[in-house]
Length: 438
Image (tube, rainbow, N blue to C red; front, side, top):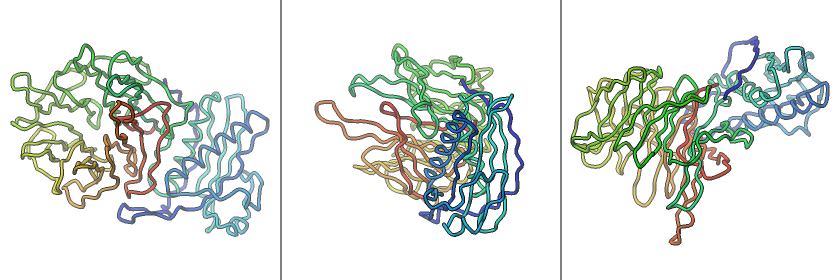
């Protein structure tokens, strides 16, 4: 269950996008930011401050757009929340931005005050005060401040105060136990939580784009059953049983309906359907002798991208939300699959197989400017960060003849193709999906 920040005050200044990045730029040189000690007035608040500072530093560094200036170089070590920095001291150590904060206990809870400065221009660009009721929310404070710093400097929405739902895997390849699990986007061990007990196989969890609800598929008595899971209440409900389904549904942008593919019981041919979540009414969107699968909405809800072999080999197509105006957009060689529309609306991520390797790439929504960003023996399930700058996916290692090997791990990468890293999970992880901002 999610605990919310109790009270937040923002005193915001216009984001000036000092750091502008496009996917055409390739690798970006990280921007130096100095993060002072987060001061506390007793042992508890000092401990909270250290945790918050570590989270902010790690988040900004992991984004690939920042690096934290070594604290040993700091000339000024004061609490700068109520004091004007000596900007010349920070210019000497090449810090372009400066973040200072303190933590105090009040009768309403734990209070954080923060100031963000543009060192080169000698100006304050953000100040913030927020209060949380207890220390259980300290990690969220760190993520929230990280988002604010990221947005004020880049001009883009952050992605740090988010979570990743995924399938946790353990056991031999032919007897895999797969449980639904969730964690903070940084994979911190204390944030990991199991959502199912492992008695039934679970696959392909998907987040609603505007709330903390997920769909996922569970095999019960060898029959694929789709559930909706409310992360706020911990309650789940059955959407229905769908023979022949291989991927869980994806939500529409307003989260009121889901788009899915499953086999027509009369023809055993996979088609795409739209279901109203409240009424459970189904509308069939495709009707073709080919296999149509893996649908994903555009963020404006007007179009759907999907995978189909109607032309021979599996390729990527788009259509209007009512199933009209179907167009093939993939143009390269290889077998395409698992298309996912970016939340920005400008790109479609996909998986492609050209034996012996798998590739994850992005293309424009008309199929132009296809670009591969990562390749390996086995790559699957790209999922977008809520700001559309990063992807997560899972990689599987080769298996051995004795049934060992085949480990799966979740990875993070910038859409420029740089800054790949593993997101740690207690066990193997697959099928990741990214939440909207909390």
